[in-house]
Image (cartoon, rainbow, N blue to C red; front, side, top):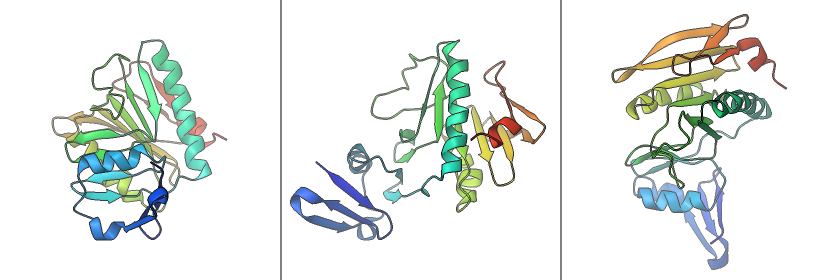
Length: 205
């Protein structure tokens, strides 16, 4: 089944059957299984919350360069301890009825049972690179989402103000381990020994 998503006018197209469906008409009615079937057929970033399908902003070149730079650093680090790190698009279930697609997600043990093939059931650390056209999505909404999922550490990389915020879970909410800026080195509480120069991240090309 070939599915085309047109996020601009919220249409879903099933080319072989000539079917066009307006997504706005179905908002609030989608099931999680329907969401999964749609996202099985596309590489578009699509997220899901309680019957509503959501389209995050299209990544920019700078966004992707920074994301892949962070991914490379984490991949090298995790290879030494037997962990696994992957990048979007990959679904992460926050809870039944809510799915997110973090820019980067990882587990410290590659054999972690939460690491399912179709979507992950949890993660030890996630990273989001802030999109300039929807800053609050990564800095407010997803802070609540990832805390709800019980993810121990959340890194927010913000190219706009050239900062890296490291949040650690304290009970049911995050506390800031630090807001690191140019000249600083951002460090993980969860991954002992993992540290990143903010300058190197922001200057990645």
